[in-house]
Amino acid sequence: MAFEEKQLECADCGKSFVFSSSEQEFFATMGYAHPPKRCPECRNARRAGRSGGSDRAGGYGGARESFPAVCASCGVQTTVPFQPRTDRPVYCSDCYRKTRPQR
Image (cartoon, rainbow, N blue to C red):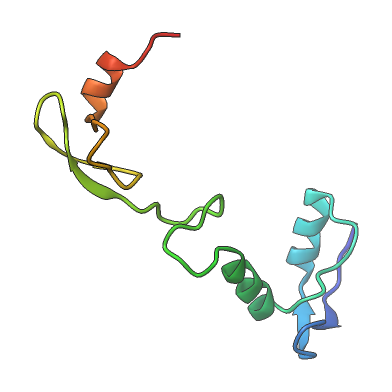
């Protein structure tokens, strides 16, 4: 199937943008039935808004926040993906593997 470039109008900003033949081919391979409603700039802004603007983007591929900690078992400096509390022990990866319950 031959695709031709199309001029589309963005639903958010009203700006005209080109829906290239390579983009149309990509959309077809992904199974998308409709052309994009937003220009590339508005699509990117919308994606950025979903992550909440923080370093931690949840399931959107952003960087995960890390906190420094000292392993309660061996005393090595480590980082963990949660805020350590003083009433709970924190383990490095190696010690955690040794202490966690086996499945």
